Length: 295
Ligand code: LIP
Image 1 (tube, helix red, strand yellow):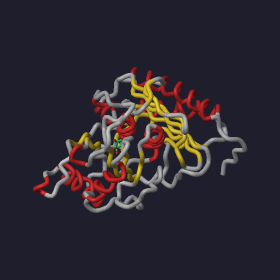
Image 2: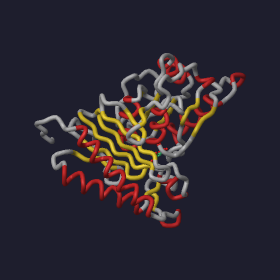
Image 3: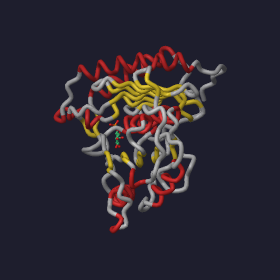
């Protein structure tokens, strides 16, 4: 167990993560990935490229040299059984949106988070293809490109329920079994018409990066993001960016208002003067089945 005797300097960590994210961005831009040279992990929709691995190595090496005593959890070096602990921990997704990356679809980012006692306190997410950097430090607000405060609307509109909501979802890489059933049946219910028992959301958006979905909710151009199957590295940075922008995170399964970063199921809601609790309960009432990531 790591013993840290002083409180980490969050501003310094933020600034260092911003520098690393920019460096990682240059590596991603310089790469020329192809579906032909990409390896599959769990299945053909769970991909890894040399660039994912090279960026994680660069980030790990830099962080370990500067913050010798802090823990590190990264997508490409994760081994089953590794757990997020109370220790100060850097959480890295070197490329979130790997499928987008190999197809040249420009919704791709580097996601770097820092947690204390399992709570995200610094987040840096950078999409080098669209020159968009989202950042936050606990208690100090969330920003786009380091200067524009999030959410983008100074006075966000009230949330008026699912019929007027734009909701992000992801297909993910689990394509069979209980969690798959829960996912696609809930998509149908959320999008379907009222005559068919559906919630008839304005639309569903599937953009291929969990981290950037959190940023979209933080910015306020997506109202909610309902997800099951992601990992701590997909959400840690986005979580603090969303919270600092006035949004909230609860569980994707109905009833749990206190989700954990490594719980693998999330419902993120944008900042609003009213309607957050109501839209969470309405969305929960449209979840068909429940997610189970315990095994
Ligand atoms: C991916 C996500 C995507 C989600 C996948 C996967 P990767 O991360 O961000 O949105 O649906 O399950 O976790 O593999 O591109 O880093």
